[in-house]
Length: 322
Ligand code: PBG
Image (cartoon, rainbow, N blue to C red; front, side, top):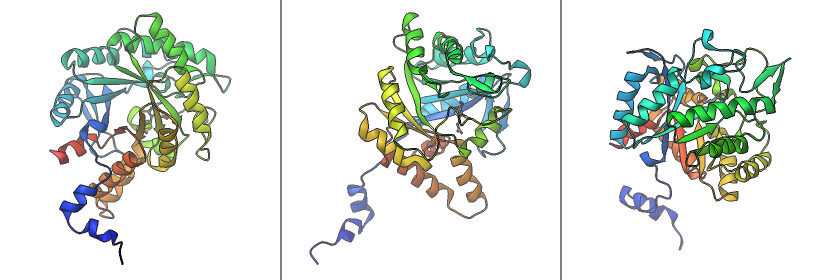
C-alpha cells in the first residue's frame, strides 16, 4: 500500500497540522434577547443558558463576551402584547427601549459590532413579519414600515441591519432609505435564503412572537427548494446586500455551500434556536455529549462555507477557547 491516509491521523500534533477547518471566536455573531426594565434576567424555557436581559445586564454580558473576543451581537427585543399593533409602530418609536438600548450599547462599546433585526413580528399584533390585511401579507406596504424601522435602527447606531422578513424588494428599498438619509456606511446582512422552518420555535417563545394565524409559508422559502436560493441571492446582491445569510444552518448546509460557490459576498449562516435546543435537550438527558455535538455542528457550518455564524453557542464556544 503506497497510500495510507491514516498516517495523517496518527497523533494530535499531525491531526492539528492537517486540519482543514478551524473555528475562531471571530467567526461569531451572538444573538441576545433584550427586555425592558432593570436587573431583569429570565431564562428562555426552551433554550437553557440563554436569557432575556434588561439593558444593564446586557451591557455586562457584552463586556464579558468582548473579553472573550466575541465582537458582534444581534439584538432582539421582546415586547409585551400591549405594545404591539398591526403596523408595528413600536419598531420605530424614537422613545422605545430597544432603540435607546442600541444607542447605549454602541456608545459604551464603540468597538462592538451591533446588528439589528428588520421584520415586523416582535412588534406586530398579528405576529407576522409583514403587514396583514384580510388574511394576506401585503408586500409593498410592508416595505414602507421596514424602511422606517431600518432608519430608526441606523439612527440609533446599528452597524448592520438584518432584514429577516423575506418580502420581495426589501434589500433595495432599505438600501435606498439608508442612503437617502446619509447612512451609506450602515451594512445590510440579508436573510437571503430563510426557510419556513420548524426550528424557530424556541425563538418565538423567547420573544412571544409566534404568528397569531396561519404560517409564514407565503414569504419564507419552502425547505424542498435549493435553486430558488440562487434567485434570492442574485436579487439581494443586485439590491446592495453586503452579506448573504442562510437560515437555519444545519438542515441547509447544502444551501450554504451553494451560495458560497456562487457569490463573492461573505456568507453568513444562522444556527437557529431549535438547533441549539436540540443539542441542549439531548445533552441534558445524557444522550449525547453536548460540548462535542456543539463543536461538530459549528464546524460543519464553517466547513460548508459560512464566513460568519450567528449562534446561541457563541459565548460557550468563547469560554471553551479561553
Ligand atoms: C424574525 C426572526 C425569526 C428568527 C430570527 N428573526 C423568527 C421567525 O422568522 O419566525 C429566528 C431565529 C431563531 O430561531 O433562532 N423574523
